[in-house]
Image (cartoon, rainbow, N blue to C red; front, top):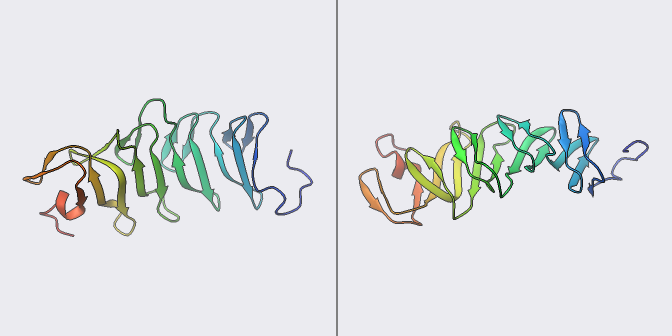
Length: 167
């Protein structure tokens, strides 16, 4: 129960049981964060929409002024479709400010996302000012990229992946 609390009295706690905040169901025994009487973060007890994504049970999320801010997929489970990509388990992501487009994804080094048939891992960045166009990422495995042989771990830019389109 959150009734009768003064402003600033609840920064975060673990829920004793599953609790619903509007359409979001937050999981028992997980941390919940309430700021200015708004849900600011929790772990989903059931699959739910989060901006343009449908996130599974166990996904951790935070909100900024009621808007999706960032998420982390559970480390176990099926990949999800998001942003036109297949996001592997454990992927973390941040949205562009006040937007439903990705600013970056952080993918486990043992997993990858595919952009234009190129497998990328680690930190994958997008340009918030250009409809979240791919900006940079790390090559998951040795591969031919735009006609050039590149090695696993190489940092790729938008121009490396799309040289004919320029910056």
